[in-house]
Image (tube, rainbow over all chains, first blue to last red; front, side, top):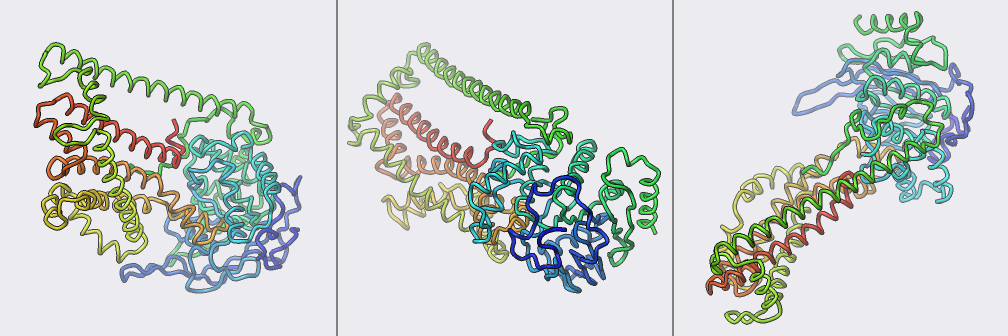
Amino acid sequence: MRGAGPAAPSVGRVAAGPHPGAAEGRPERPAAVGTAHVVLEAVGKTFRRAGRRTVAISGVSLRVAAGELVCLLGPSGCGKSTLLRIVAGALECDEGSVLVGGQAVAGPAPDRGMLFQSPMLFPWLTTRKNVLFGPKAQRAAGADERDDPELDAETEAILATVGLAGFSDAFPHELSGGMQHRAAFARAMVTRPSLLLMDEPFGALDAITRVRMHEFLLRMWERYRITIIFVTHDIEEAVMLGDRVAVMGGRPPGIREVIDVPLHRPRQAADADTAGFLAVKRRIRAALTA
Amino acid sequence: MSGWRYAPLSATGVLEAPGQDRPEAEGRDGLAERAELLAHRQAGRRARIRRVATGAAGLAALLVLWQVGAVILRDQVALPSVSQTVAQFVHYLGRPYPAQGKPLWFDLYISLRRILIGFVVGVTTGVAVGAAMSGWRFARHLIDPVIEVIRPLPPLAFIPLFIVWLGIGELPKEVLIIVGVIPVMAVTTVAALDEVPEDLRLCARTLGATRRYTLLHVQIRAALPGILTGMRISMAGAWSSIVAVELLAATSGLGFMIMQAGDYLNTALVFAGIITIAGAGLVLDGCLRGLLILADPSRRR
């Protein structure tokens, strides 16, 4: 288990997550333990625009265990991105409660990293400086106590981990799509989040690069032992990545069904052709169309 | 004009070497990929040198055409030769022109001063107005129609008005430039700030940046290339305004000097004045373009 588990409030930002690169080898998966990292209770959100009310999500309850990878799956407009942004603290829910690590979410914070469909690298910064953005910003706020040599060493280590050691002085426009996403991952991880929120991060990549990114993400997940909530509209992606898949949809939008993915780990792209994989896909498709 | 240009996700193509995104690549030191990056940059530098050389050749061709035309015409008043123009330029650079009593460098200084004062005040005001419009819906709805009314007007239409209001000193010239610069800067600043994706702000916040830090180091920083592009557009407009007002209502400045030279049929000096304006404009634009390249690395190619 992690040092500062989610049962203990992970407010101390730097100390919260595991040390990047510290977890070598295959960790024990802390699934099925009682400590829920993320707890959503009857969460609802209604947007009011120009006098019109749109219910984005309603009555969503979900518990995500520490170290678990849960996919939120559904068609566009099913509220999955809204739900993710509520957990991130970018949106406030108007019903229910959201607890992360036992604490109510109030605004964005670096213990909840976020990755987007576009890598959102800062185009004026090199890869290295992009990675250093978080620590520098936190230092400006007096929250990161790591000194320069420590940060530099950690940046180098994390860039090597994501395979960008030779590109620390390259600008984002000089990187390929997959490399940009790996750089964004490194930037999110250097602030040591315990929870990673991913909003259709590989949706705009070509199919081949996407498969590579799935394998990359799974390896990183094993390595850093973080909790991941992964939003997608791709059934195969959800089954490939998730421990569980929360199927969303309906009127008003909410979670229809949470489906276990009983496939072995580590998974590889070739696993998508196995009978077990197809069975899970079939179940999810049935839940989506029910 | 956009300062915000994301490299497309799957089609950057720049470094999409086979195996680039293969998992095995993570553990390697990436020496081959690094060599490729450096080679790509060097190719960019070579392409830039070629581009500059081609541009210089175009300018040289223009000078040759001009000289040939002048030799064929043999009419110093209609079309002075390149050498005559250069001679006039050198002669009057430090010597006062008889009809006016000021040398060329002084007229250049006067015009530059008007431009820079007007430009600095106009850009500062315009960016502030644009930022207010971008951040505050009420300000946007209030100011937008005003700008839409003013923007299409040629600033020259205001000249008589400013002379009536402000006399014929330096102030009306500076105000004229300010009036031309503000709407352009407000519009480009609004566009540049609006173009910064909301998720970029959220991304910075999830990395631990405070609101203030995000505003300064992400939102404004991301809009900077767009704002600098607006400044280049404004600068071009400022030059046309200042020369026009100097032709009409001034007793100094390059525009006035050109008018005087024309009155005395000293066409070579007219040409010298025009080329001085072109040169000064080129230098100022070059400075802004340099800043733009500093602010936006994707333009370094």
